[in-house]
Figure 1 (cartoon, rainbow, N blue to C red):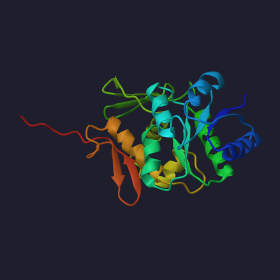
Figure 2 (spheres, rainbow, N blue to C red):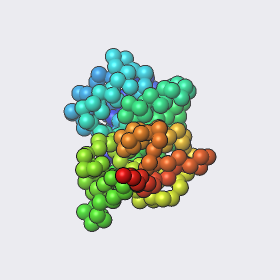
Figure 3 (cartoon, rainbow, N blue to C red):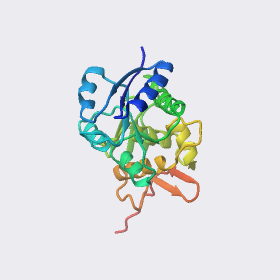
Figure 4 (cartoon, rainbow, N blue to C red):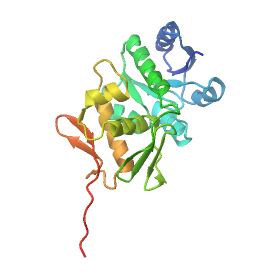
Length: 237
């Protein structure tokens, strides 16, 4: 069955270019041209991924992204932006986008990124997967995509879950940002490592008692990150 891609861009020439390349790659494609139209398309078309422009009429891309995530809709989103400003790109990630691309972009690279996201989804653990992974007070159930801290569920986005799972499977190992891009985003080309930094920051906010002084996800300066077992602090009477 063909994967469905929803394109949301108010520039017909860009929508047509993306649509042509995605159909050529074997995807089923539907286009809408403003932010409000996304929510009707979600119900009727049921996309497997959304390519979402930042600047849209009626409701911009950030508002669309924020509303979808507030409705617990976890469909993967690739944000398109004509802005080079880092704060705009980070804003997209902060509001729930999985990835972003800056206009002008290569349609072939967009196709590659979409295929990478679908490969990650298709390689999720099967029923024969190992027992839950425990590290400190965190328990990760790969098959169920569930994470708990001291038995309390932690709500993670799909990409945050995949990042935590990858870190858990490589616990104690220093991973570069490029290794994380390859392992979690399945990028086989040079990617923007700031995507990793933003998702690490979000993950820390959810699993660390104090994100400024993490106990689990450690920054290894000039290299990357490492997941560690928290040090148990002894108490003295």
